[in-house]
Length: 462
Ligand SMILES: *Cc1c(COP(=O)(O)O)cnc(C)c1O
View 1 (cartoon, rainbow, N blue to C red):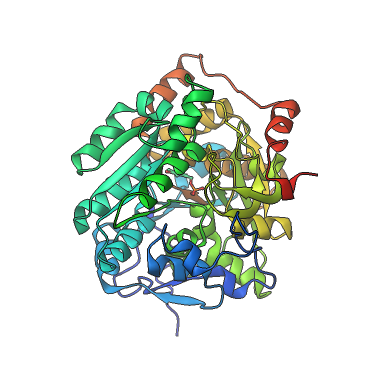
View 2: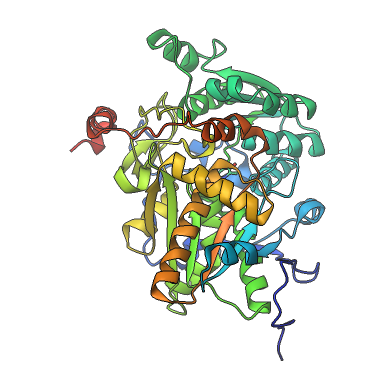
């Protein structure tokens, strides 16, 4: 009874409609030790559904707090939406392999084949669906590089729900066409920090010239949601619910590899807040947790915002304005403002609590890479694979190339799977800076990091 289709792996492999996953997988159900619970910052007690209800949709709160249910059925309306742009292809990087002259087999799961240009649509559609089901009047969110805002604007247009997006100011200025896309889908876009919230005004008072940060935009979006009747806030990464929705990436990839009679020795993904990586690795990590397989798993982050590799595993706020619950995660401190590097989607001070716990317990590794090296890999990849990658995704490409070259040196034919999270058409200023040699690598000093660590919440200071 073999499901295997052929030993000749095509460039692009797509699951059939029948083979598409009908459930999301909740990684926490198989973790022997759970991530520490989020805390209510006022009481320092684990957050309850009641604490979260004013901020998030009911159904999403349930998903957030549920560490037991292994599989969640994907509602029919979401499956329907997924069919517009999924399955995403599992691509065999034959040309990259050839160019590197490596014995490694390289696969990547490409999530950039939709108008939002990234994997973020997988969770956006789910969150908007539940908001609509609850009869909400509208949603607020933040966006860094603009991919999440775009994905959410797309989903809100589909389900006919108003949306206000706080966009990190330096991205708002660097990527004017991202805002135009959001406007086209009907969203309101406000550069953050702004004068429309108390949190924004406070940050502007301290630093009127700031280019903003994700943490700061989150504060504004949450404040706006809780002060507007019938509104809730949605977040595109970090949270357990987002990793749950993104498990569609890994479930599809694993099924496709099964059919092709493959299994990865090495899984690589970029990590901003951890949602694409958490989604991609979910079913493989399940194998690892259950002792069925032991793929190496590598998170790749920018050297300018190194949460895993140089952060602390402590309780911290998810936002700069300190109004969100406290999460125990690898963090650079919620007051850390990364240099304006070009991978906007990776400029977040914290990391998914699920991935933080798995990293802390030794189930995965992490590396930090410099942006000029990342763009070198992006350009090389584009020329050989004919896809223009997002700067965020190119972090994973960098490490996949490095690992494939190690395979060449060692004469090992390993199977590598990496996540190609999106396309980079709105990042041409960054490509141009790389190509004309003006791109620099900013790496925070230990003193820079200490400054932000010193402002961690009291319970986390050493
Ligand atoms: C947002 C984004 C990321 C990083 O976010 P995660 O939550 O860590 O996945 C990576 N790649 C692209 C293209 C993105 O838009």
